Image 1 (cartoon, one colour):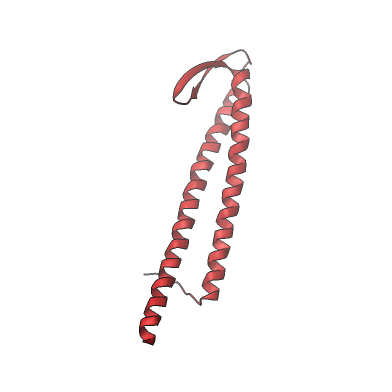
Image 2 (cartoon, rainbow, N blue to C red; image 1 turned 120 degrees about the horizontal axis):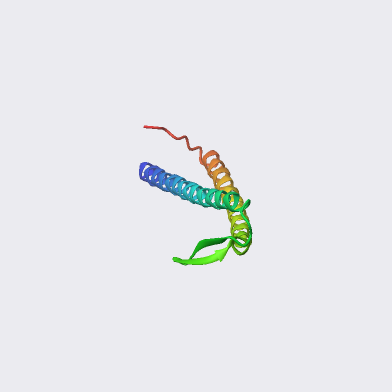
Length: 116
């Protein structure tokens, strides 16, 4: 009977560990995606910055290429870039909290990870 309970507990711990690892992996993927998008915004802003404000440029909006001027596009890109930075900061906080939660859980349940 105790061996069945122990086996069940072991399975539950393994499932919880896998859930923690999957959540961390998903957060890491989201962080990578947002970092890439933020870098693209930064690059475009750096490219447009020295150009005259009345110069024609094109911007993709919901899959449609629209003609604008540099002075019209820069504020929208800057707003998007700032928003991406906030999202990135929040995702990093979530990742760190999830890591801390996992470490506390491992200590509480005396879990040691064995790499195969």
